[in-house]
Length: 235
Image 1 (cartoon, rainbow, N blue to C red):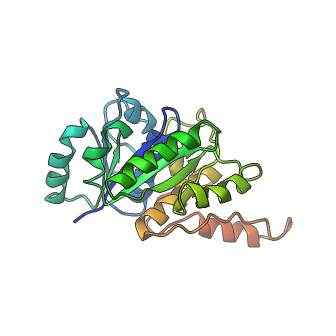
Image 2: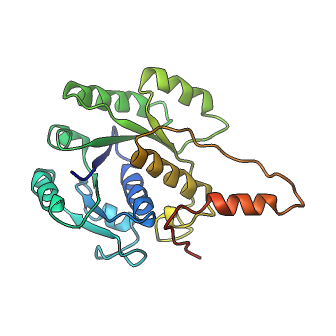
């Protein structure tokens, strides 16, 4: 059975769609064949976040994007099981949790660190736990300097399974998903979250400091860390 990952959020604007796209891209860049399904309530929102106007994917042949209703997910999952895909990522509305919650092998809940977002995320956790689902969490728009203490508190109150700490990104930098650009910190954080998802872990993200302002050790080390096996760097 191939992994079926549902990505949702407690409130609109938390970044669930962006997270679903970048997790799918990160998995595809590591050599996995990924089906990305848009079940969001905003038409073409995921396709726009993926940097494509018609669902075609110009930057990797291992990713396919399609749109569907939540009610169609059971059929699509069965069809994908008999196809060539190795992962399914679905961007889903939390209101349909009883449909996709029981289908998913893993669920990712995206929340920001804003005061209004945490209670909404907690409400979704409660709904999911009522049907026996314990979600992993991605913290979006995370500030390593301001939010570290609050993130630690969330591990005791919301969940202890945080798999991603995503910093703010410059959405105007490119029309393609940020995970394609390994020189950006946000890209590294999405790839790290995808590795946690793939391995079933919640390893914390570590930021390295330069070893020397004059030596090449830092350049060599960061170049090594920026590349996963099978990744193709986008210049």
